[in-house]
Image 1 (cartoon, rainbow, N blue to C red):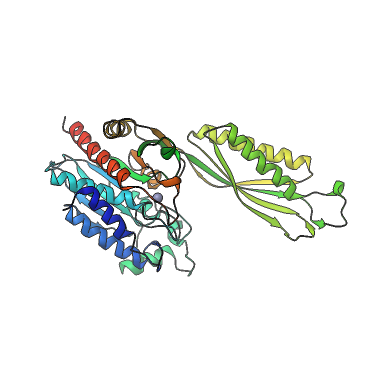
Image 2: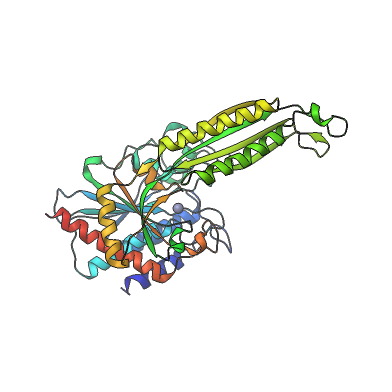
Length: 411
Ligand SMILES: [Zn+2]
């Protein structure tokens, strides 16, 4: 085998060409390209000494047994699906880099006392069924019957898609492991943000994943003729919503690390000569601490109410989706910090503002994440880029982390 970092770069190139669309990178849940990606990565797993298999949800699992029969299992992984017209690094790094790390340990004849599974999840991005984490939910036994009823743009349900691929009935899987059999889950991922670049560091250790609430606010006023309704008699829902949007921005700017975003705005009836009678907007609020997120959200909605009242508008709000913050395991984070200090000279702790498979995996086991710098923080874009030098450093960190954990487990 070639040098591990060269091997990793080659694998990333090759996997980056496995696509459902000509000329751009797109791999969605159970698509032909996903099937090819699993087959391709499985051969790389085998070459590194792992035994690959696929579960009924299309997840690729490569297992390496530990040196003792009662050994616990460490999970390492990320997702192999992509957004449409994606970059080559999101997800792929977290699957291929651990394979390269294990190949390197094998080359050095280091035998780990624990078992390792490298996981390539079949679905994280939520492209095909507008619902994320189907792969890791199946692996952790948290996939529900509502997930199976989701339908894609062609009207095919998750259940039908799975049964077509497997050629047999699909029943909801149980968790692939008992919590007590596991040492934890490590996910290596590009940062998808600008902090490492700003600090001129190749890698950083994630302290936790921010909690997130997505809600919908509806301002209701009265539509009317834009020419004949005097300004004092108007109940303009958009003018009220606009006041709210700038308030959201001001509050989040003042309460770092809170981030809050109004991402969609629907104006009705939506004509140039009609006063807006109704506006529906989305509000996304994230914070590493649940309490801070919840109180910020309460204050924002209360302020929306005040703004609405002052303008004679009605306001309703509805929570659409909510995920609590997830803390990384202090023990795994500490080991990872030491590895980063050794390889990079210093470590940096970061909060992940984006959700990852690690969020779902936290229901099963303790989690840790290593972030790798990506150019301009750009992701979900064909220009997404992590340099070979940064990937080499991340690889050295994971090799060192595995050795540290091995040392700790054999005490
Ligand atoms: Zn990702």
